Amino acid sequence: MILTQRTWSWALVGIGYLLVFLLVRSFFLQGLIKRARPLNSKWYHEIKKAYTKKCIAGWILFLVSFLILIFFWQTANLKQPSLYEVGMVFLIILAVLFAIMSHLIAFGTSVIFVLKQLENNQMTL
Image (tube, rainbow, N blue to C red; front, top):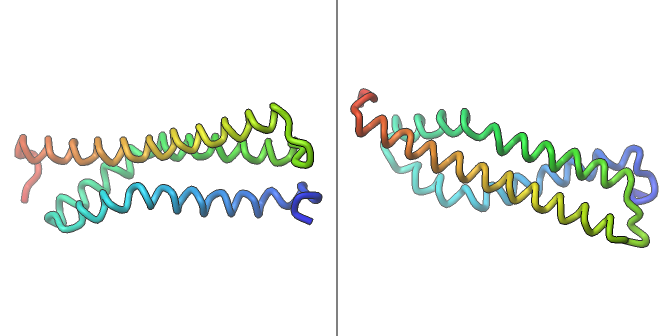
């Protein structure tokens, strides 16, 4: 029923896609966050604040991959996959990987930003 009635089922696919993305993102970020959490709470909160500002590119890439997925869901012939369907799936996976890499880069640059602030004694502890 979900495959045949695509006018409304894209919402279910989108919700599933969001949940999978958040699960994969947390899989990669959880180890970094777990290691940053025991730091001084002020440092950890500064890292989180900087990450929140820097992760917008990752969310934009997620949105792009989400829109591509919805377009693919509306137009694809899933009963007889062709080169178009394979290419679209590859494009969606590539966009998701770039989004996750962007989140990891944002977290890493946030840590470096806070370390530089600490090194320059710009943060009061």
